[in-house]
Amino acid sequence: MAKSFKYLIIGSGPTGLGAAYRLKELGITDFHIIEKEKYIGGLATSFLDDKGFTWDVGGHVQFSHYTYFDKLMLEALGEEGWLSHQRESWVWMKNRFVPYPFQNNIRYLPKDSMWKCLNGIIHNYQNPSTKKPANFEEWILATFGQGIADEFMMPYNFKVWAYPPKDMAYNWIGERVAVTDLQRVTENIIFERDDLSWGPNNTFQFPKHGGTGGIWKSVGENLIGTENFSLNSEVSKIDATAKTVYLSNGETLNYENLLSTMPIDILFKTIENAPQELIETSAQLKHSRTNIVGIGLKGKPKPELATKCWMYFPENNSPYYRVTVFSNYSPNNVPDINTHWSLMAETSESSAKPVDRETLIKDTIKAMVEDGLIENASDVVSEFMVSYEYGYPTPSVNRDALLKPLQPWLENKNIYSRGRFGAWKYEVSNQDHSLMQGVEWVNKMELSVPETTVDYPAVANAMWGK
Image (cartoon, rainbow, N blue to C red; front, side):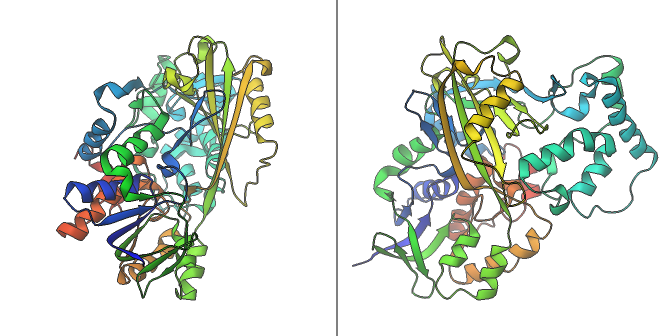
């Protein structure tokens, strides 16, 4: 006989866990989480390799817009479970490190490149654009000028997103990019001043043990309870009329309300008798694969890397767009911090930017030697790789139009699609945003409180500490 629940949750990433935690907080126990993997955490999980190195699925850092999230993080690991870091992020190009944000620190560039960047900013000040940008590429040119676009923004963003910026919208940006201030840039050049502290996450926290996944494992096991989970349980079909979920292991589960955090395009393919036009619409949403390569090393990092957090790589010699000095996040990310250290690289992939995954580890090590991150390939003692088809939800130019008919149809069937790929809104897909999408969904269902994060991303990103 099928089990029945008031709330059935698909996926145990931050969104599903946020919903379950909030239900339990409200005294509601009639819920269950199904997860296709054998572990809790989704894209926020961590792995321990066979050499004793811990790896995340990308360069996650803990910072927050929400007091609720902060309190939950403290409850998950306790005060002693966290390390605090000053952000140090850099751009590696032209055989030198340039402090991030790049546009505020162009004084580090060779003089011809510096002038090219500055000349582009001056040109924009003299010829301000009056038309609304049609896409991300036009926004980059109008905001930074041709020089910074050519030297950094265009090549870097193609490496990150795996799509040309002209195929992307720009309304997701908000606080994520420092716009260019001619006076500030000029002062930095003349007075040889570093400009390092921009941004909402100039300090961040990281777990002492277990990587980012340690947080979510604790939330699931200690705060929600393992009895509320079915791991290794993949959804094969959803009957939206009968309100039944069929699992690949033959089980069936009934629900009153379904929260899905699976990618919304997969969700529509999974729903029996979903309208064909909506299946086709959701299939047009763009996303990129993320490939994480972890390189465990013997010895210690060279002095230039001793305090760095992560580095951006716009140039073509490397497959990766970002490398994190992961041993700097926590000494427990390596077997012995006195004799080992680690680098974690991220490489994006799409139909517009193919990647040879068979050679990616070898290509990554080669580029790390070329970029001066590793002195000798013989220092490598561990190689790790994990690849996820759904890494980044791409804010394509037609994304909002594609999403518009999808959620109303689902919600009419008591199905709610939330989270990084459930809502498909990159601008609210950090860990704090994702968790709060689950929390706010429960508040809507149980307390009739409107959702903010998923419906009003700009408002959510402006409400630090609320």
